[in-house]
Length: 324
Image 1 (spheres, one colour):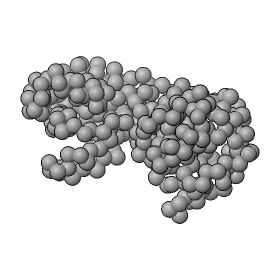
Image 2 (image 1 turned 135 degrees about the horizontal axis):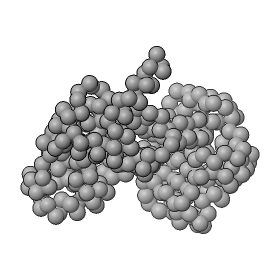
Image 3 (image 1 turned 90 degrees about the horizontal axis):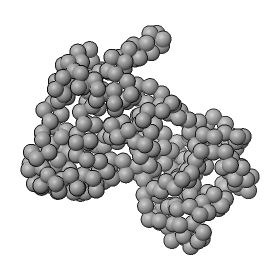
């Protein structure tokens, strides 16, 4: 599942929301940090090469003006307010030309309007911010407009706002590098205090899924608390107040994976942190994350992360020596 490093071109239009830019970049940065390698790179552009002034007054520096040639890397077009003012005839011509070569083009929030206005969404399914949905669908009847947080349709992507964009990036990470990495990235953006029953509807996002079922939430919390000694599905289900079969169904429906897949991802992510951050033996790490043996741990680790635990440490040691 691991692929080579991926580069994104990011075109940022003026009057952007700062959080929208962060929603694209921060999951990629986090994935690099967690993986301990450069899985993702990105280059920011503005229409004229000038620093972008965000609506919050915090400037976003860019590498230069958007002057595409025959690049094939994915292109993300980010826009928030007054997109018509900034989507000049020249910019739309550039987008139309570069679309011939790009592996995909994403319209992020109001960026979906710019792609639609350039006829780059004709015949595709797409979405946009909920406040603009009716206007978008009425203005562009040739586009199959759907009420989703984000839409991936062949070589086109559209999102409905900042948090849906974060969900999109987690989904792209999952598709490229697996559920374990996407889960760990998502957990970096979750702020949780001790919950009471009144908090049950204030759930974190995991990819594009929101845990709105108290029974699934209870099972996930149990998994997080029992990484060292994993519970059987039957015990998880009983303590979560549901049958094992029903829990399987709920996990598939809400989380998109089976309970054992989520459980294993939690344990492997805990193990990878220990591999990277401690000098503990692999046998001890295996025990501390619920594996029967170091060999079983090593097999699961390699299957998920495309390298052995010793390979991770060796690579990071080499990187540290080179940096020194």
